[in-house]
Length: 317
Image (tube, rainbow, N blue to C red):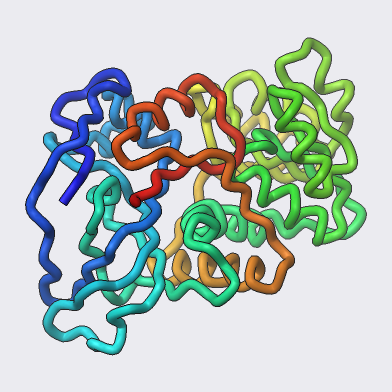
């Protein structure tokens, strides 16, 4: 089968299409004919040898990719054979997704509802569960102001919709005009370009800030929060997480949530809930750009150049 392999850390060109043996489903596993594979910002950092945390540095060589969508082609011992032929999305456990076939834990596959395409379903596998978990933690209330950073990205575009549906006044922050336009179309009441000096004055005070950028932008978002506000850190598009000490947060009466401890059951339930919202027409996942499997390097380069909108995916023909 075709796959994309990483033999050494480096530039996007380190991702090389190759032919490898087909994987085989073992006990408790399912073999998925992959049609769509997720590509994330964190994967570009890992490929470059700069993972967000040293524990995330993988052994090489490997086939990257942690999220896939497709059809179950076979199952291993102990797995219900009725699953064969089911459209599913699933994590791979950290690697193996950039390929025509991937082996996954059969207990973790999530059926894709009718009316939801595989690209949209893969988008919601990670971004949907993250956005749903952030909203649950933030407990956004009607009438509050929610600032969403990286509002044109995969998670950010979902947060704009979910916060608006919860009755909040959403202020979207992004670094490009088309991303701001998208956020307005998804329900943001206001949109500001965080690359411009003085953007915090345009954004104004907030009750909740969803921090997907980090660095100076995340710090500015923290300083916009009213007493009783909540800062939820979920990304580092700037390259660094927002630095806020516990003492600073306490002095301003702000709660800071860094990361979320979710069990596998939590993650599956949140992803399934996001898929159900999409099937009902209440949540619109944004697939901004797709690349053929063989062009995984181009997908990584586009993400690193900040030239993407919404979610970036690999499509297996």
